[in-house]
Structure formats: structure tokens, C-alpha cells
Length: 223
Image 1 (cartoon, one colour):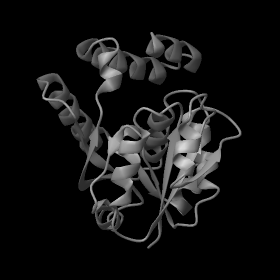
Image 2 (cartoon, helix red, strand yellow):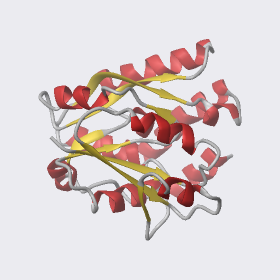
Image 3 (cartoon, rainbow, N blue to C red):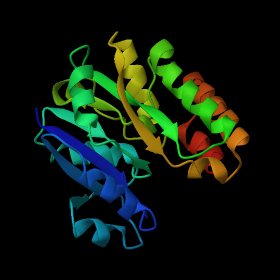
Image 4 (spheres, rainbow, N blue to C red):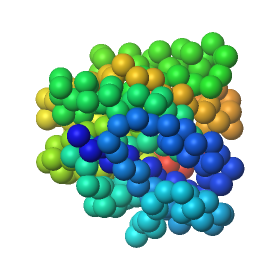
């Protein structure tokens, strides 16, 4: 089973090399597709030295990931964020998970000893089991056929992963939580503080479900 790993990037020159190094150890049949969303730093050139990368026609993760999927040769699409590190055996976990469903994600752990971040990881993993909602930092994977059937990612500036999960949930499909674990940087929680960020994220989800505009949600998210 060929798995296409699709990674949206934007101005990641400070962290991209560590992420690329973690990709090199992945075992199993796969291809890697980076999609740059208009970086103004050296991200594109750094990635180009070792991996296939394309420039998205539009910016925004949803647009980037959809564009990347058009280059994918695999029957399974895996979407990763570049602030993560992945285990070498994650593809085996994907194959095992997809025996139980058409989409899934990984367990998440943050690179932090903070009890708040441990709680955040626990809540994220539990949310998948109970609410059938996965976020992009958990490494969403899905069969290419099913991805097309549910309309791919919505091309919005934020909440694209949340809406994809809601579409899967509406279709009465299950998001399978794989056994493998992704290690993710906690950097986005540090800008405004861990607790405040966790609270704001819950508020934004509620706003989105109520039908608030994506523009307003993005404005609050960016602080």
C-alpha cells in the first residue's frame, strides 16, 4: 500500500530540517509531498534539496493540502504538520487502522513536561474516541477515494481540519485512533500562554459550530 504523505509549509526554515530528518527514518512504501504556501524565507529551497515540493496556487493549509493531493500517487493520503516528529513505524499503524475504517489519526504528545500540555494531549486523544473529531496536528490520514467522496478539505483559512472531521462524522464514518504517537512542538501554545490558548481554542470551536465567520475566528486565533 503506497501512502502519500502531504505536508503544508509556510516560513518554516527554523524548524524544517529537524522535521525532514524525522521523515527519513519512516519505514514502508510511501512518498513525501511538501506544499509551500508562499513562504518568504528559505523554506522552499531547504526542502527542495532533499524532498519533492510544489508551490500552492493559493495560501492556507486547506488549499495547500488539497493541491498536494493532486500530485499523490498513493491510495492513502496522510497529512502532517511540519512542527511534528513521527515514529519510524507509523505507516504500519496506518495500515492497521484502515482495516477498521476509511480515516484516522495518530495519538498526540507534546514536547513539554508541562502538566497542562499533558492534559491537552489527553483531551485531544479522548476527543477522537468520544466526539469523532481530529485536528491536523494529530496527523489525519484517509483513503484517497474517501477523501474525494467527502469533498476534500474545505478551502478556508482556519478550521479546515475541524470541518473535515465534521464531514466524516456527518457521513457516519469513524475516525480511527491509531496506535502510533506523534510528538508535536508546543510552540503555538507559548505565544499567548498555554492555558489561555487551550481556552481560546475551545471558544473558537464553539464559535465555528454556531456559524461565526471564519474571518472573525482567524482574527481571534491570531490574537
